Length: 104
Image (tube, rainbow, N blue to C red; front, side, top):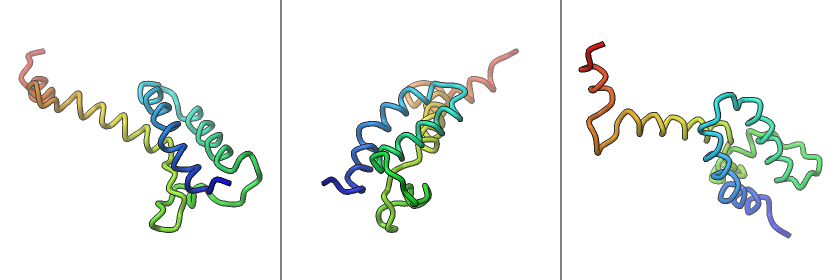
């Protein structure tokens, strides 16, 4: 039998990165992400009924939770990192300073 923590870690390692890669470029993904998050939680419990709130599932393991990251928050973080890479590319002049210096 596989423990809940190891199932959560497997999902976090193998499933969530693939979803994040796709969803960070997807525009209207709110309800889609909510449904995907529900599917991940149901697979965590192997489709059985559970009475554990999502807050407990997303709580880090050091605080007695399962440590499964919330899909919506991970995708939002990836979108912010994309914007950061666009605006502050270390190999190029910063996008913001180029925007300030351009004449419209």
